[in-house]
Length: 366
Image 1: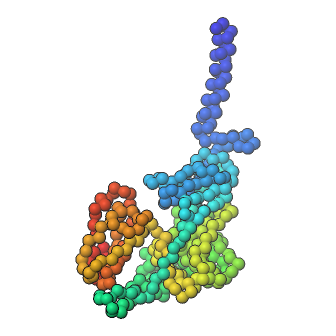
Image 2: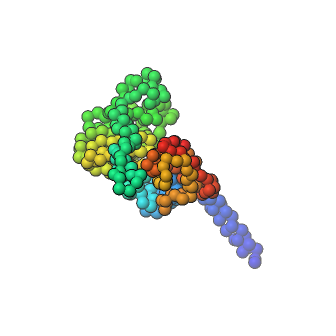
Image 3: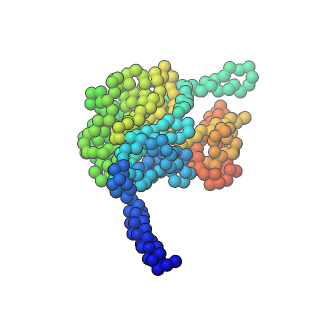
């Protein structure tokens, strides 16, 4: 190589170094070229999620999928623009938004995932008891769950003392809670005419992203008359709304980003009530129950009730029910020899499958 070629080579390397290094520094600092070839700072989108197998799509492309341990979805380094965003999971309804990303800002969203098939279960007033001997007529006993739900309907929406830890707080009293004025986790929903509004009652520093401003904010104004409304089970960012045509909808409170997701939950509904993760509603005179939590139900029958027996959780009859979930089990059995258990699923191997639950009849809660 001649001296002249060496000088040209070194000059070329210097030019590449001076061009590439600043580009790498800018890229690592979050800068990108926009459609007008201008350098802009990037932003991001954070999807608050508590389920595995959930995928986040931006403009039709999968950007991230929730795993077993890390379920929240953070998508970084997005150029400032509006992204058609979808949250998808197999056998669940799609959640979607047109999310606008700004420079050096992360937009936080709370997707409401509703199963495609809700499988409402009827709750009968009486339970049929098998006869002790052949030829005898079966007996019926009052269903305790039905009785408890009827009590729930009588008080649902009424401000009962003791329901709120801050009941004696003057600010809470001023809200005049009732059927058309509901409060949960400092999110205040209230109706004026045929419109539902939301207002944050806590400090501005604690205000959640789905309530982007102070004061009252319109969240839902349907064409049909609102019969009743309340918070969605275990969530303060979504609500249930019953309309005059008997349709019960799940509606997210978040009205940002153009699309407000609304899902039909039940039809021919006359009234509803919520208890923890459970939704109860009447349709055509029948009481139904839908469970929106992570708990799964197992059922069993014993041969000679009443008796104390051992139930091996590994023998669960449900094909999709994990066998490793003794933690936080609730179980009961009646004199008819039937019972149900609500169990929280946990990671395989966390508890040996040989773990057993001891249940005594006629009734005992673990």
